[in-house]
Image (tube, rainbow, N blue to C red; front, side):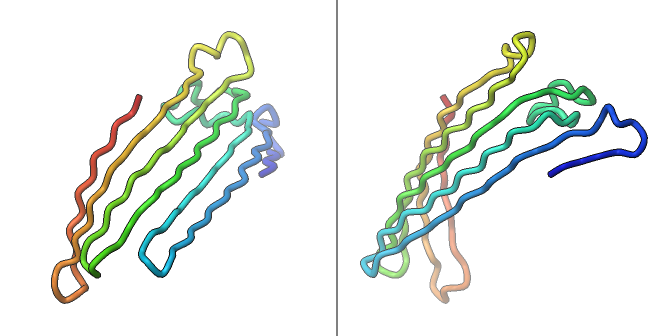
Length: 127
């Protein structure tokens, strides 16, 4: 994104935000899904927690997620997931906001009879 204002040109900025997603499933019910999103910007909209909202702040963040799952007996499914979230600020005065999170998850899925309703149970932990 390239944002140029005719007035208030001090708010002009560029944002680079590529995104990648993939998924593969075997005939036996094993599947792997992944996604990755990167953002490099100096926009005035603040970070995820609205740090420096209204102030142009140079930063980048990267979020990557992998899910490994298994569907069996046409009714049940289990998944394990891992997600890595990184955020880095360019200016030394902002670097106290740098962070790296590791998120782990486990999920159980049960398709109720009729195949139009399902129950889902998930546990997630962030370190």
